[in-house]
Length: 367
Image 1 (spheres, rainbow, N blue to C red):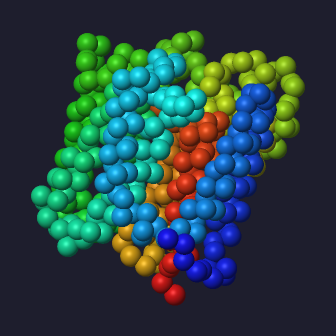
Image 2 (image 1 turned 90 degrees about the horizontal axis):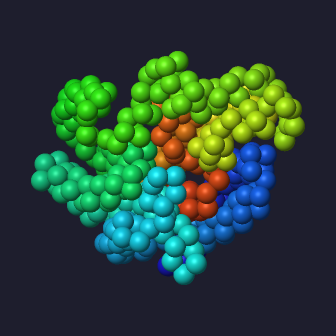
């Protein structure tokens, strides 16, 4: 499984970028909730180790177990429904042998690996509507299980990753146009229904977040409270920020005006303490990581490698955009972590595992 590689083919630039982003996250978490900083450092050490190990294993061999990955993914998500831990009104965590983790985070990586191998084995069928429907059905099972937790943000993220997988896998343009022709009006109709007071498509809690985003002034002291304070915190940082671990009384962080500051709204801490420069640095690093993964995808030796690298780019890029968009009020509060930055060991370690596979794809790229 371990092949002989050339050291000059190792993507040290990608490693430097993800480590730099993780360090920013560790610093921000230490300021937001100091008692979680050591735990995040431990997650970084574990994730970095797994990344290095996986980067040396031939991904083509690992992908042979793709059906086992899919089955394990579904089993874990079913277990969450049956015996998962609840927190914040959602049942998303499993505790197995004393290890507490979030299967919906690992699901993203497992689905990328599964579809990478499935599509490579059936590459000639990508133009077949039957195969496309089969892929959609296979996605629907874990997608519904994630949505029921409830976890709409991760469901959206998984759907985005699937679209990237299918596009990179060679989906014909006619199906892309057909999908857009159906998806856009369907989205408009669903949004109109969701905004009705007696709708049953989503929970009242989820509907409230959308209403709070559309009418922030009306819900300023309730649903929109966190997002408005997050925007205030980012704006108050101005160009250079208030300084790391600022003890200013006027600080939104020190005033405890935002809950889940170390996870969903970690970008507010970065904006307030490191200012516009700190926020832009974080965004630029995220973009560079995504671009580097895309460059690896373009040079991959096979379609599976291209799917792994491109989908990891989508995972980090789109998820990062969603988290920052929530913190800046550009989209409804979805509760999704900022890759490599937000507190949460499952998210951090899963991201490093994804990068580990990208590094191995890079080692086997076409010369």
